Length: 115
Image (tube, rainbow, N blue to C red; front, side, top):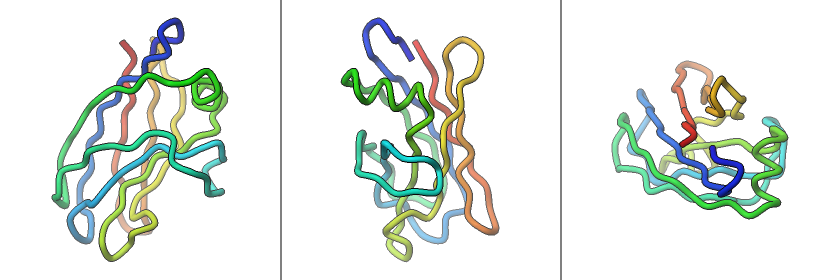
């Protein structure tokens, strides 16, 4: 994440979904147990596993929410359109963020990687 240009670059890996992904988003402001509106939408391949990446230019308010830990990411499927996997990002060295998205029986890792 580049806080000077407000640019967030992200890279996702997911696996073992119950059916093909139909969408994904970063939501906020909210903690990991609350719900909130969509801040950033992702183009997710229609598959039960895969990777994708992209970037978004954030408003100052959204940048504040991301830095403050008031966002969560999720991936949706047809059987679970609200969120099959979900997790809250955490700061890591060099400005990277990491989130582990999970259901009761599987984990996927979601990485946000700063430029």
